[in-house]
Length: 200
Ligand SMILES: [Zn+2]
Image (tube, rainbow, N blue to C red; front, side):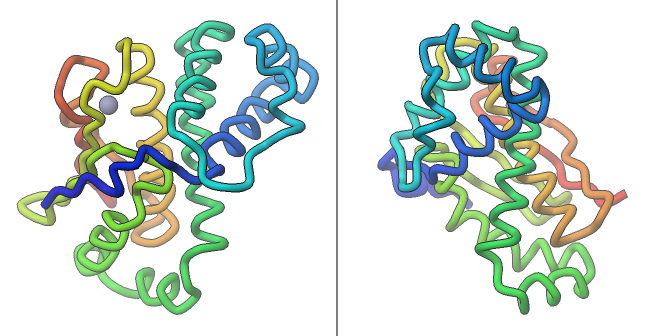
């Protein structure tokens, strides 16, 4: 099953808010701001968005990070940003009943309920990316961004973000040890990032 969710290229403000938070967490406030200043976005911490943003604003921030702190640290920041984004969604957007119910169900049933809901809502952080999933033979999900990312470094950073977000959501809602095993990756030239969902 595949959807090109929304197709507007709009995403929630959390993508930027949590990326700045993750950068501060890694470097401390002063060094984080210095990175943003050098990249020409020094006022970003003071004007964090509150409403839907164009996904390109988010991608510009990720490109800034790649230029200023390098690919490896950017991937770490983006993985943490994805986790923080899911923490926010979990705390603010998922009804208590669903949280309780999903944790009580066996993982396969929980995924059967959760993945369609994720498909409807993934646009909030994946923008124009196309989300798809399979329940059998092994549960997996994928996201395809077409030609949106200019470089392998950018695709890798966004892959780290998606993976961090999905993994954290599964840990909160499906099984505490959930991990995503990468099957395909846009940073390696595949047409999508695809991950197998594992509970042990
Ligand atoms: Zn990937």
